[in-house]
Each structure stands twice: as C-alpha cells, then as structure tokens.
Length: 371
Image (cartoon, rainbow, N blue to C red; front, side, top):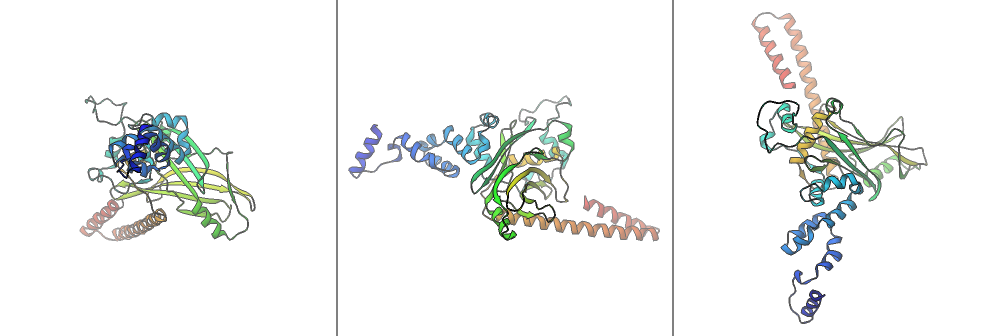
C-alpha cells in the first residue's frame, strides 16, 4: 500500500505527515469504527478528507444498531433509508434525547386549533385553494423503537407501529402499550430481603430506557424518554416495582406536558423480576391524558423544533421535580380561584343592582383566567 509506505518513510526521516497520508482503510477500520456518534460528527467537520470518510452510511448504520438494538428491525431500517442522510440523519434526530422547552417565537401564542391545522392535512375537505408545495405530508403512522438496558446490556427491544388516521386514535387518550396481557420480560434483579431503598436506588441507577418515535411521512424522529427513571417506587399493596421515565415538552402559551413512560415489574421475594408493562402517555399540567390527535401535534412540534441535548446525570430527575412543583402551584391557584368564585356567587345571591353586575364581571374574568 503506497500511502502507508510513504507515511513510514516520512516518519523515519523526521518529516511532517498529514492525516491524508494514512490509508483510508486504516482510518476506517482502526479509528472511525471505534468512535461514538458525537466524536464521529466532530471528526467529519475537521477536514474534507475525514468528512468523506465519516459520512459513509455503514458507520452510522453500525453506530445506530449498537446504540439501539430495535433499529435493526427491518421496518425501521426501511424507514431510515428514506431519511435525507440515512442513518446519519436518524442518529442526529434521536441522540441525545429530546429537549423541547420552548416553541419558536412565531408559534408560541398560537391557539390549539391553529397548531392542529398547521400539522394536519385535512385531505377530506376541498376548500378550492391551491395546494401549498411546502405543506407537510399527513402523518399516517408512528413507529415506536424501544430498548431497555440493565447495566448497558439489552434486556428488551421492540418495534410497534401505531396508525394515526383512525377516529379511535384521534379522539381517545393516547396509550402506547408494548406488551400483551400475558407477555413478560425477565429482568436479572431479585428482591432478596435487602433494604428496599437500596434496591430501588440500584434500579434507578442501572435500568435505562430509550423510546424513539419515528414519523415515516416527515422523515423525522426523536427520543422522548429520559435515560434513567425519574422515579422508582414499590407499590405498598401489590408489591409491584414501578418505574417512571419522563420528558417535559413545550405545549405553547407557556404550558408544558410530560411524555410519561411507565415500566411495571412484578416478582415474589427471592425471584427474578418480570417486566409486565411498558407504556407511553402524554399528560398535561392538570393531570389530564391527552388524546392521540393532541399528543401527535405536540410530539411533531418536538421532532421539528426541539433541541437534542446531552443530559447530565441527575438533571432529568431535577427537571421532572420542578415540573411537579409547577403542577402543584397550578393546582393551588385553581383551587383558590374556585373558592373565590364560590364566594362571589354567594354574594351575588344577596346583592342587587349595579354591584351585582360588577360581581358578575369579576366572575367572568376569573373563569377566563382559569381557561
């Protein structure tokens, strides 16, 4: 191999050698194949020579399947092949996890109807207008690629496809459930009589999860799960070990929702735990589970506008606890408004004339603030 010989010769003579003097096969086999995604992306931007080597599809395909075993599913590989830069685009969308706390300025004050119309193609209604060439295609399905690891070893990987064009999906609360009623997944963990808090801390530290949502029509994806659980508890009555993963996502008008993923494990004392449920829902700040249609709008906005940030250890749990505090404060404000409205209504019953009209206007104002 002449390039290698010239490199050796230059080195022996004390001459300077550039990276281009190294044979591409050596760089690819012994260097690039060992890099993670961020390092590979960084290397590709350092020189045109390395960019040509680093952007090859085989590296990114290998990186994706080693990071998420579910990506090896033929259905997922087929969808990724249509992404602008294949597995490189998919990795850029899906790693790190979604960080979407603010909508773009031009969308922050949109009403829910305006945001829904921006995302859904009302193909059954002909308004006689000229089609917008930049209009996004309608989303007909969402693909979930899910992986659970224990101490960095894959325990569970699954891919499911959810149709998004049915009335059932649009009008009922979103509920993505990966396991059938009689299906379970063994986990190499036992309740052996050790102190419960130590066991739960161990679970929180070592059981990680990835839930990537893929929109095949728009060729976008996002990892909507926290890496580690934001809470782990054992149900006092059933003994189930319940893990909660969550990502806080912007909804607009200063509001947020949580994409909450629940993992439920069962097992008797001294026996291995069995994963019996892995499910995803979207919950607003009032504790209401959103419909498939409303959830899809929010998730698509996250895919399109959300940042992807590497999260420091413990940061996800801290953000989740801040979100819970905001929910608590919101609940207290709502209760106070309701108490005030009750007092005003009682007052109206005993007051007549102009004062009654003023009280009525105040009640209307309080009711509008609640909305």
